[in-house]
Image (cartoon, rainbow, N blue to C red; front, top):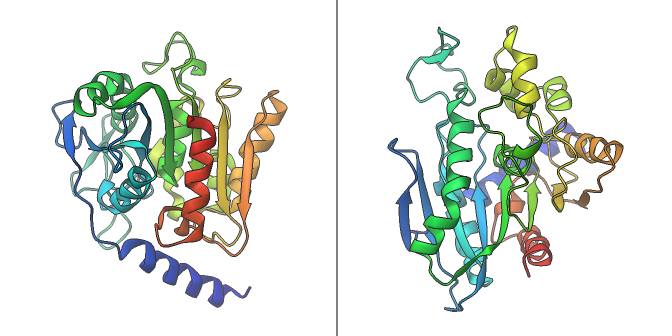
Length: 301
């Protein structure tokens, strides 16, 4: 496919995925005091009890303009498939406030992409949300089975899903390290920014990885705590779904993670979808979204 045709496909797929109206949650609950520390809950549309809980982490290159609203149709789609869903918001970068990076302010020039992520707040929030999830979900969705949790996420959210499942293998001294594996049935990562070395080499999302970690001496230390490609093996069932025509996060990023997992002695499932780009994975109108639901089903039930 020519570059112009690939760009045209990406534009059409993006427009389709983002054309769905926002779906209001059944309940919302805070897991902290910041306005972004909130979880939206969607009950299974068939009213069933004992439904597995899908924790959904949205993408958007860890940048503030992209919040959980754009994955609310996906949350509703999964709820109509019989899942309980918890859609997590978290602090992102570039909301117009100068960002503190080791005491130094960092901003982007006017008109440029917002800064990707906040260190350490983005990770503080995901860790806090996951730790609070069993209690919050039991309270807000009493019909959910919090013993059967699958984490899924798209793009940067796919990175965070993989990271959330790897906190027990974080370096000693990391504030997010868990003493034991988190109680998850598995992870389904959708076009994830799964390997920071390859993603940085390819300049994924306008250099978002370098912005997230900082482009100074802190990069390597932060990568050791944030890059799923080095936080292996996890011992948690993991599946990745990626579109072959993805020009936002190329499939090479997922392939690098799968290869790293294999070298660590862990098998990670990789489903490559032909004729599919970045956004159909979260578009309820696309066939790819049904594949995502099936991958979640295989781990959850």
